[in-house]
Amino acid sequence: MGKLAVAAIVTVAFFFTLSFSGVESGSNFTGDSSIGRGPAVKGLCPDLIQRFDYPCSDHKVQTKDGYVLGLHRVSSVAGMLREQRGPPVLLLHGLFMAGDAWFLGSMNQSLGYILADHGFDVWVGSVRGTRWSHGHVSLSEKDKEFWDWSWEELALYDLAAMLHYVNSVSNTEVFIVGHSQGTIISLAAFTEPDIVKMVAGAALLCPITYLEHVSAPLVLRLVSMHLDQVVLALGIHQLNFKSDILAEILDSVCDGHVDCKDLLTSITVIRKGTFARYDYGRSKNIRRYGQFKPPNFDLSRIPKSLPMWMGYGANDDLADLTDFQHTLRELESQPELLYLENYGHVDFLMGVTANRDVYDNMIEFFRSLLGKSSS
Image (tube, rainbow, N blue to C red; front, side, top):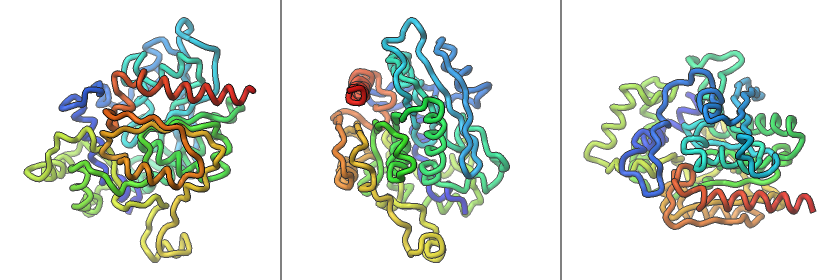
């Protein structure tokens, strides 16, 4: 039974959120249809970023369990550079997205371009199994074993490998920016001393750890019907949302049961309201962890000295305010917070005014850390 299937199939709502991004969208959402682009022809740099004359180079990094990930280094167009090259910033995308998530809007609206124009050394990560990653040293994507992982491996293997690579190239600590799943894997990774020592600071958009108060109706129905178990019983191990069978499953969920017009706020979900390692079942948990239940990721282990900034909104049906407060209570530090009443989950990534509402504040946070470091 693949860990990805168990942990992520139930989050099918995310894909359909993006598929219907131009329908019933909120006032802040761009509705950019480029999310649904076809398979890559060459790579993220030549297919997207270099078309706008931004210097971009492709890099590969291998995780300790054999996955080969794509990293992309982006610099500003010479005439648009506002300041000299700053510290490295690693961008971590959300679930079922990839590195191009940071470049879907115009050049003055997309965070990847904006950070480059402000002089940051921008590194764009794509985790295993996504469009811009590069497979495995020995497994094919057709192999069931290729998909036997969960977001825990994304935190402890993928993010760790990316950070090691960027840290070695730049010879300095790295800023991290994460959205949605990118915040889950960041916070989990920050509990590990060998990983967090490479991080200079973190900006987290729609931070997620606990999901006890998810309110999106479609997501709640997918959880209640145990969609992950249904799909596994059908012998599906790879997340292919263009397949007829998954389309039929979604039809059965929406037909007469749920108002699927709320898809924009139905992004990801975890059935259990805990922030813990993967649950293998009681017997295997005993062998692997020495206890019946998987151990929690202890957020209090994140160093108090790690500077963090968090942006969150009142219209986010996934990153609920109650769950967000739960996260804050477990941290030893007090992150800088940006609260936006009219923002939902996707608005922080693709809102037409996010450059002013969100990114200016985030960049100011990073600049303040550089000032402290230099002094």
